[in-house]
Image 1 (cartoon, one colour):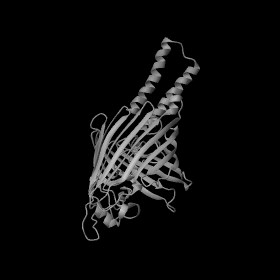
Image 2 (cartoon, helix red, strand yellow):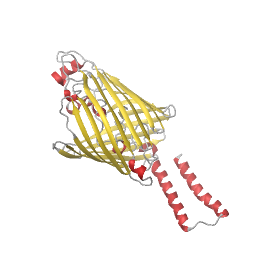
Image 3 (cartoon, helix red, strand yellow):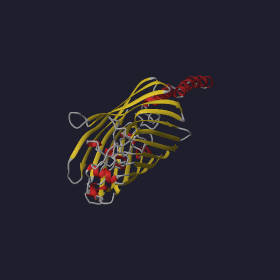
Image 4 (cartoon, one colour):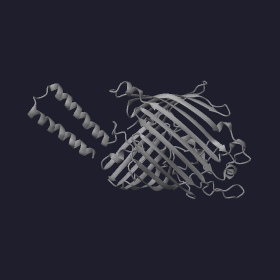
Length: 428
């Protein structure tokens, strides 16, 4: 359809001047130049939009993925390449350590076999060098069988469709130098898993995704995948790497979007012990349920976003026993977090013809990863936190952003440390 519009534009551009010539004197050279420039811009916008590049048409998400990750869907048959990256500088307000890190460089590689079969992948390079603290990971790699708008099939290493940033985490797409803590420790973003499922858009504005996939691992891993802890569920991700399949889980998401307004909800449910037993030989189940509801509004320069997420974990006493947790180290039986965020596209309101954008923003967040704990354990004051963030995002281009903000951190133990952050990010 884009190319039909492209052809129509050229036809009108040729036909209208011919009709006008028969009825009116020829326009001056300056007017011809203006018309040619306008036509060239429209042709460029159509091309870039079709390729998923810059301009309003190019910054589009497809099937739950970010703009750059979606390029393969709008491209022609063959290979599609995109990516994003971000550099973060941060420091503690009390004079503590300051650091700067090229956090990640992402390469999207997709292949469109035909209009019905698509491969898409994301390769992530973290922290600049594997010789130091960096790593290389496959963030997702899946095949889509596009059957019809209301029903399609996806299989491979997929992003779990929960919250905002787990699927839409390209830096120009969200406000804030750092991702919300609720979407890191309750929804353990970025979270991927091997699985298979269905997705589609059954009616105007409506979309859904539902997968069966490898479950989380509440105990028994190592390092960053050691299992749940007092801070939340983040270290329970298996991330598709030689993942145990003793337990499987299900996840589903439904959303409605229209005229800049979107609202939806998602859920994850499944056992997570992956065969683990206590030192006494008792089998545990550690079934985990995670849920979230979200809404956002982007209209007339205003950007509003809100999310609430919670989780419930069974057999936490057994998880604590296997992991050796005592006292206030317990994994939470229930967890709860939420945030609200607001930004305003100030520059384009003051200068409508400018290609730049400046968005002041603020976010308030509350998170308690030990809302309840089993009998015999205590809650840590450090896990009941509030964060207030204020800053601004400057866009010299729709696909490039510079963000700077300040975080006020507090908790019940009075150990919160405020910090400043600055990010340079891009997508292509």
